[in-house]
Amino acid sequence: MAATLESPKVTLTKNLINGEWCDADSGRTFEAFNPATGDVIAHVAEGEAGDIDRAVKSAREALENGPWSKFSARDRGRCLFKLADLVMQHADELAALEVLNNGKPIREVSFADVPLVAETFRYYGGWADKWTGDTIPVDRTLGNFFCYTKREPVGVCGQIIPWNFPMLMAAWKWGPALACGNTVVLKPAEQTPLTALKLAELATEAGFPPGVINVVNGFGELAGDALVKHPGVDKIGFTGEYKTAQIIMRNAADTLKRTSFELGGKSPAVVFADADLDEAVAGAMTGIFFNQGEVCCAGSRLFVEDSIHDEFLSRFKAAAESHKVGNPFDKSTQQGAQVSKEQYDKVLRYIDIGKNEDKATCVAGGAAHGDKGWFVKPTIFADVRNDMRIAQEEIFGPVASVLRFKDMNDVVKQANTTMYGLAAAVWTKDITKAFAIADGVRAGTVWVNCYNTFDPAAPFGGFKFSGSGRENGKDAMELYSEVKTVWVNLGER
Ligand code: ADP
Image: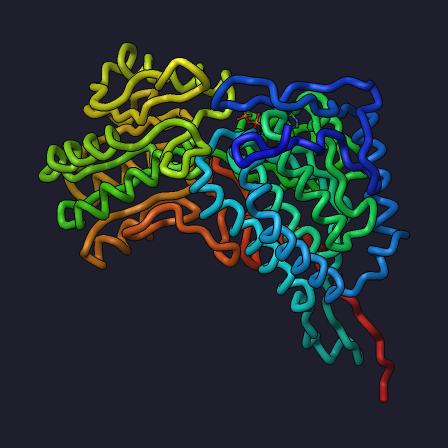
């Protein structure tokens, strides 16, 4: 059957190790699904410890002896620029594959995911030959020394990513790692393996030599675990749940790997009475319903000032009820399907908790959408208290909790009463209030009169249980390089 936009052809289902597409050593495969229909769309090589071991060895060889080890920083930058161009040349195919395997709407993938992937590679291509060391003015009484620092790659990087932005998370990991001269073994999420494989194919075309980028698919407890424990891996970059990060941190300790974590959130979005309500409602919608709510920085706790609470809620409810849910390939669709049956069940379970255990008031949605695929209606709970489970636990779905607040002290305290600290937002026309929130809330990103704006140059990551280290920007270059200090004894003149 010819490939169409709605049924893109799935051609890549194997692992990429040392530049070769290979089946899993065990010969086993696992199923990949279309969340909009529940249909199986591919059988993907299921890597385990043996496959990971081969990939790590190939990454080590490429790092130390392969052509990559002779690439100048500018050569690495050129490959990243080429990869960015190839991503845009294959934009439609990449977008269709992402929609097929993840369930997110085509208009968001085409507008956000694909261009951001290309921009990320381009941005880090720019860094590659500008990542310099320093000359250090050391004490002359020590002797006549020339002291300088240089940046070296960390080495072989194991990168483990989630299913909510499969392509973009691969780009966030590869961009800085490759700019700094590392080699990588990527383990995509088992729910969404397909686009990382396509990106890896494009990377080969862009000129990255064999072994520099390896992709091994499989489950977290097997392939992911083997990557974390492998003594040949120098660093683990992880995005996912904090509970998985805790396991990874423990497992990485034996080999003292460097680790960086970008984890979950329960981000507060604060609406003051003086806010432009149309903008605040639009921002709240983007904050919680973008990407089906499967966003680590989703604005899932909306704090609304008492005096405008009812007005805000009625506008927010109307917007949620007219939000278009359905076929993610339809260009007018605003919300697609949850990624898996497991996620769909989890979101519906939390809706039950909100209604029954927490006894909050469900004012919009509150149920599955349609009878095929894994769709959930945009859901809003009102009368939520900050100590309720739906206000404290990460749901990772289209479920907003609306809470009230009295004044600045009250809202800063409530906003910070969470284990997480990934993001926060504020809507107000008063610059003093905006800065008070930006300063007072412990979160890695604060959005003022906006939400979910991203740029590869802007650091992103969390305080507290939301992670450690920052992705994007110059900060990610730090994560993927070691500083070497060199002392040269020039002798007395
Ligand atoms: P979710 O539950 O939302 O899928 P996870 O944190 O479990 O989030 O998954 C994020 C990534 O971590 C996935 O690629 C998954 O396979 C991987 N993973 C899960 N468990 C482990 C583990 N014990 N060790 C290493 N990687 C893991």
